[in-house]
Amino acid sequence: MKKITKKVVVITGASSGIGLETAKFLASKGFVVYGISRREFASPNFFHYSCDIKNLNAMCEVLQNIYNREGQIDVFVNNAGMGISGAVEYLKANEVENIFSTNVTAPIMLCGSVLPYLRQTKGKIINISSVAAPISIPFQSCYSATKSAIEAFSLALSNEVRQMGIKVSCVRPGDTKTGFTQNRVKTEVENDIYGEKIKKSVAKMEKDEQNGKSPLSVAKVVYKICKRKNPPPCVTVGLGYKFLCVLAKFLPKRLVNYIVGKLY
Image 1 (cartoon, one colour):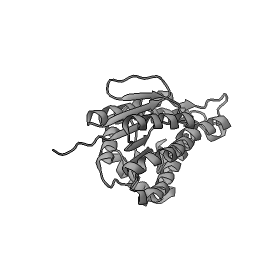
Image 2: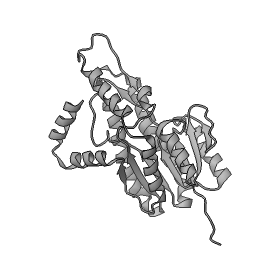
Image 3: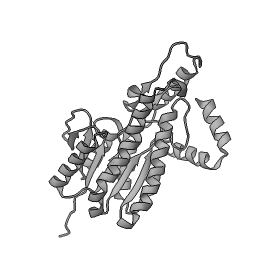
Image 4: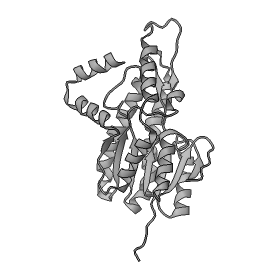
């Protein structure tokens, strides 16, 4: 009889939204799933640890604990993240530092920490990016910047670890209906010189998100990457968003930026 080999997946930000749906979906497909999030959370579908991804020492202890229990880690999904909306000139330094430490610094450090385990299994790293990486969105400048950074990092990391059999991929969700919309930090000031432009732009973005795709659509893409021997470096979720990303790649940047400015 052929031996069935389990696959162990670790997902950050697994208590809500894309992370939760991905954890549940992968568990339903037979993966051993460990979710990590800041808040306490219990699920009948997967194991969970409460930990802040920015606390690297604590996260390393969690990874070691998972390895001690399972003897392997096959896939690491960097999903936890945050958003900030508003004009650049209203941003505070601590807000910028917070989004970059959450969306860039922590995922980078976690990738480094999980590599010793993934070398043993020739595993995979899946970083959750966004369509906002190739298509920068006004009044979401920092969010777009962090997602662009994580894609650039992922491509570089992929070349570093390819010789070890480790694969690195990014997943780009477009507008997705999750609690991320309500949790977005908004910079608000009195006597706003932008008039209603910020509010209208953010309102359109939020409407698109709440009418967007289900987080399950992202979970299914993550699952396909987990199953593929040689996954692509970047996958955009949804045919419409794939088309937009292709246009953004081949059309003049001035034109793309003008169109995005008109949309938002």
